[in-house]
Length: 187
Picture 1 (cartoon, one colour):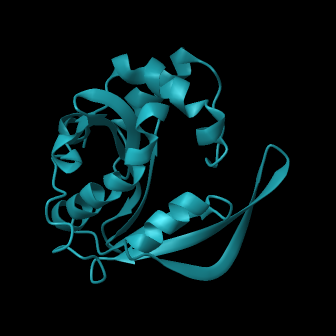
Picture 2 (cartoon, helix red, strand yellow):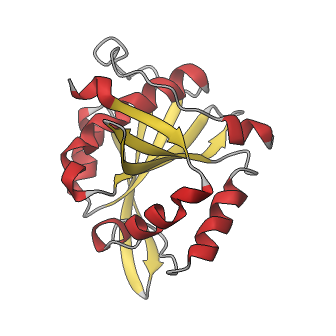
């Protein structure tokens, strides 16, 4: 069964090359707000700097012990009890598993971080992710936002999933540990 074989591990410096290679793929970077340089040195620095952030953390997604993707929690605001997040499957062979990942994250964020709202900023042309979010109970906010990326205008929407709307019962089996040892060390 797929759901019993998905795990999350803390990102280490040794993951830098893999993440950099994924992040530079067109199918991933085309839906990201920023582009990154092809620099393993900068990627390693980014990983080390992330351990010091109080409002951000990230993990490697594993399936059957194979490294397949990336997931992060961003802009954590414990006072407002809200956050944003992102994820992607870096390995094409496992692309179809992308829709299985979010419920693990939602269960963890709502239960362990005590967050009440999860926001997602999604490019308007990222139809697959918008549909996955709707399937999980997200509501799209009406406003369309605009941002420039590489001299191009990018339209994106904000979507929100509230703890009250999350179907804990339906996704009860989607539980996994999101280790935070490096994150906790630096807080």
